[in-house]
Image (cartoon, rainbow, N blue to C red; front, side, top):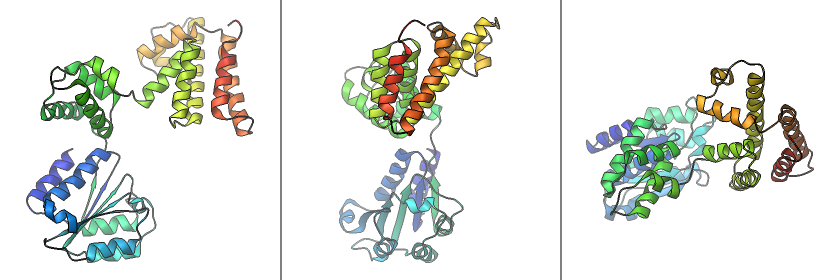
Amino acid sequence: MDRLAALEQRLAKGDIAPVYLFYGAEEYLRERALALLREKLLSPPALTWNYRVLFGDEAAPEAIVQWATTPPVGAPRRLVVVRQAVFFGTRSGISVLEEYFTRPVRSACLAFDTATVDREGPLFKALQAAGEAVEFTPVKKPLLYRWVLQAAREAGRQITEEAVRELVNRHERLTDLAAEFAKLADFVGPDRSITARDVREVTAPRTEDRIFAVLDAVGEKKYAQAVAGLRYLVGGGENPQAVLGLLARHFRLLILAKESVVAGRGRENLAGQLGVAPFVARKLLLQAGNFSMSRLKGALAGLLAAEVAVKTGACDYQTALETFLAGLWAGPG
């Protein structure tokens, strides 16, 4: 957020580069940077004739340059925004754009937006020489807390400290945090404070939270909950192979937890032995007690069989995972 504030200060002083590249994982800040350019460079009436949005995966480089070199109408400057400028993520150059960067038109501001770049690529280096490349990385938690409090003040809403912590713990990307806070503000309204319960009821849990909930359901032998969670994850676009891998890791940890207890190594050092947080170690111990050692080791073999079944075309991931769960709890152990 400091880089956004610095950009705003430069624009307020009239220090406007002819070419910008906004990149990085934090989409919300990239959007704010583009909004700042619109606000500082063009009055509302000038937007009609002097503001153009192109998409890098559709527009030809020649078309981008053509729009940038078109004289503005009734305003000192034209703003051309190129979204999804994916070509900055490759090592190959684009001669038309590189040539433009050597002599950019001063009556235009050309702004590119993309998530990833290749800093060693000729296109990135040419833009840096001509203008300004600003990276927007994920925001640290203390700044996210401050952002939520400021957003609440600006929206005329009250929010409890517990709700702020819950919201930030669920959404560590500012892009997601902004969307979920707006949802909360609309849901609660101005008449009462936003509480942690509101956050839990209204906002979506992180994908990681959903995955861990499925793992816990498996370890706790909650079949219906585990199957429903798997269907939600896979149906929602989560990589099923990654889910299978996390299931395998979970069972390996359960085996290690059970072995540690059987060997009498002590529960107090289990977290360090497993490389997990103490509360996770306690949870693993409880879940390991739900299975015999032979059943835990059989689960790893079952997951391997599920992956082989998918890769040989015998079934899809959803079917393989559900078949694995059905067999996991069949019979004693």
